[in-house]
Image 1 (cartoon, rainbow, N blue to C red):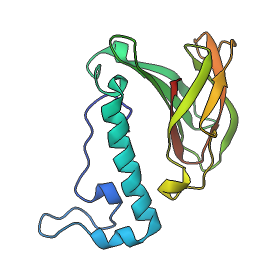
Image 2 (cartoon, rainbow, N blue to C red):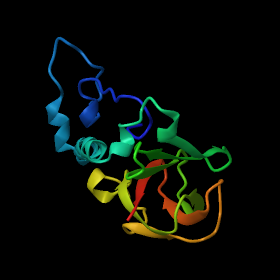
Image 3 (cartoon, rainbow, N blue to C red):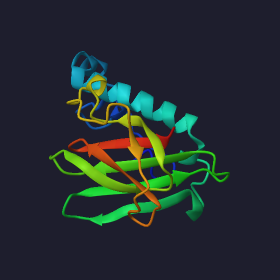
Length: 169
């Protein structure tokens, strides 16, 4: 939930999905990085931290309701949730869309505040994270078709049990 308001917390070993519980009497299980899945999680955490630092929308308005806006919080049938993060100056915008089901969602419409190209910042199902590679080929185009209380919308492919972040670009 790096995109959700609030400060991020990761216990020792979580950055590489070690299987054992955190234990102050032993070191991190670095050997698990020989497994591609664990190395993929490590790469994902590295990229999440970089994106978090690079996008003020993700951290600069944590304490303000203006920094967070629900887009989709009521689609229990599809198990999809979506929200926007904004920086106080309105210069940075990040949309987070999560598919909490094991089924990919193709052509899933999400309302957005502006038309134009939206670039995929992050796809947790990308191959370099040991995912299956279901995604949006780097971006999608938002059109002048209102949805979810927004003046424009776009159609996304949301990977199974995955999250995508997009930004206007």
